[in-house]
Image (cartoon, rainbow, N blue to C red):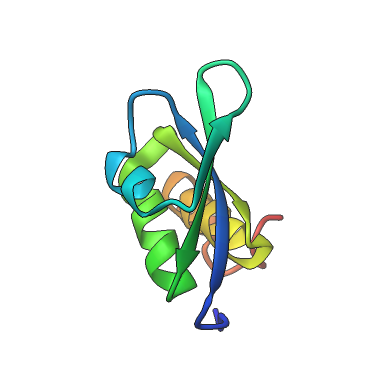
Amino acid sequence: MDYPDVGTATLLVRAGTGFGLRRRATSVTSGPPGWDVVELPIASQERLVDEALAHGRDIVVVEPAAARADVLARLHAIVEPERADREPVR
């Protein structure tokens, strides 16, 4: 997937996790119960997707939408390998 190279990401980060992301954040605010909303600058959406996947269920990519779609597509490809050749899940 092609991504712009620079931007800002908005993530939901489970309380008590994602300390590296929090250190890079420009803003951390309370989100839904048990979650914080973390905004951080990103140099590469591809690296954001990789990092979000490494954090597993403790991170939800809210924005950018293209990165969120790629995270969901990769997760679906793991769970349902036969879907790997289909369009990304949005």
